[in-house]
Image 1 (cartoon, rainbow, N blue to C red):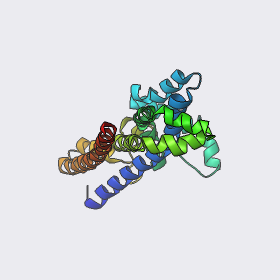
Image 2: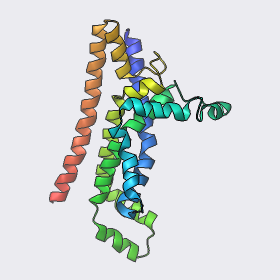
Image 3: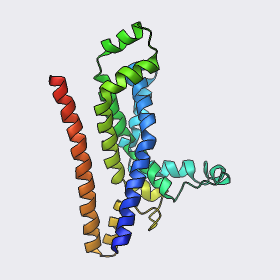
Image 4: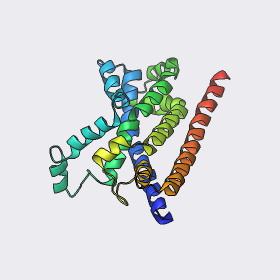
Length: 225
């Protein structure tokens, strides 16, 4: 594998993980808020569904996406609109987002649960509505945990393999992300290229985890004060 192809793989991996993470954010924020702060009926069911991709094999998650966006699902309708999802980089992004969603959800739930409820009640007593309380009290106080969850989901999205290969395939230059490229290089015995991709993967993961741990440590120090 030449250097150009390796940069292409890295670029595609970063794009898929980033888009998947961005797709997750509003859903994770909304679901965390409903479960932790609004305490809606059936919140146990909502939390179970949100955490389900963590318990399922990634291949199963990819299969669900394939059913949803394939020819037996929304695929034909989307194609009439000029949008194809399966076996494109967008499918890789959706796979990364689905598999990493539970990690983001859990981190956001913990972050929101740590916000002093008395501050939120005081704002409500002063006339602020639920959405204003969320935007001006809950989210600003929980933002470090929220960002930590976003970073954790991004790292998980970068490493996604099983769901991606089912719904997006392993198409070089189109859907081949870093884990798929490493697998392909090992399959053909190109250990040197595989090692280069492994080192890049480790470097990106370490940087993201360092940022994640820094946010958590900073949040704990502020709580101690």
